[in-house]
Amino acid sequence: MPDALTTITKLINSPPGQLAAGGVLAGIVWKFFERVESVLTDQTKLEIAVWLLGVKVGQRVEPWPDTFAKVFDRVFGTKHLSWKCFWRSCVISYVLLVLAAVIYTQVRFPSVHFMRGLRFPGWPHMAMFFGITLFTNVLPDYLSLLESRFVLRLMTRTRSGGVWTGGLVVDVWLTLLIAFLPIVILSGVLSGRFDSLAVLRVAWQSILHPLDFTRGVFGYAAQSPVVIFPAFFTSIWLWLYAGSGFLLKAARRFDIGFDWFNRKFDIEKKPLQSIGLVAGALVAVVYWAAVIVSRVVG
Image (cartoon, rainbow, N blue to C red; front, side, top):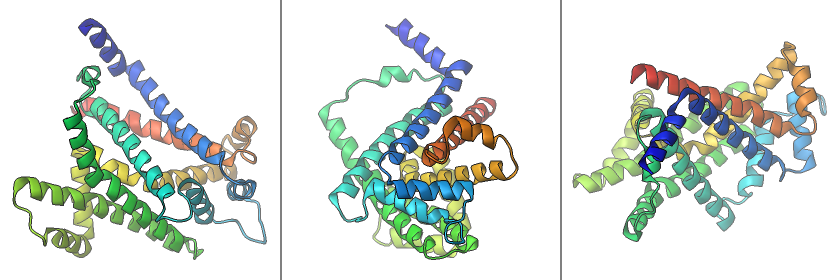
């Protein structure tokens, strides 16, 4: 058995294994977009296609925040304070928590035989795990989802590209704050040095020195991304949706393989799947880049 585990670990950590892992991530992202598209109305899919293909409707191009807001509501529901929204947020939080742990282990510690850790823990450990992650992940992620929903609603009320960019930046900053505060609280409680003003001090410092705060939290996230990463689900989804959509529009404008892509994947009928394919490719490239940097630096 140990020999088998060693062989599997070496295979996963080999260049072909890491290449395949990036492909799997790309496939997961693509399938997620495909699954979301399957629950969209024909009108919403048409509006996304209109945005990608640049067709005018009522003398204007359909702005992407509007279409993304509709996609968002189809996934989580229009009412945030609902059981449907909460349990879907919980499921996504735990799925991303496990996925982040696996990715981080393979990128940061490629020599670890992680297959040996796939043992079912005892119930006390399970209870502790769910208790801690409920506080550090599930509830903050649900609150982050509410924040993203609010920012997105503001973005749909304007046609200013500058406001949209500002909304994306504010969304990242607020998500960082929401994800980091539970860690501050838990660290203070466990160390016995927590006081009731700690959260207010961190929040105030994030307002006074937003750049320093952002750099500090990103530095912490680079060391412990498993806790921070799941809170960014909506933000990453939003950035991938917008970024991939604009890449497709740029490819159409400059005639860079757009016609071939459209013939293969039919953007008009499957617009969100087309975005998902590009988004998956972007995620795979980022993963491979992280692996290469980790191997070179570490």
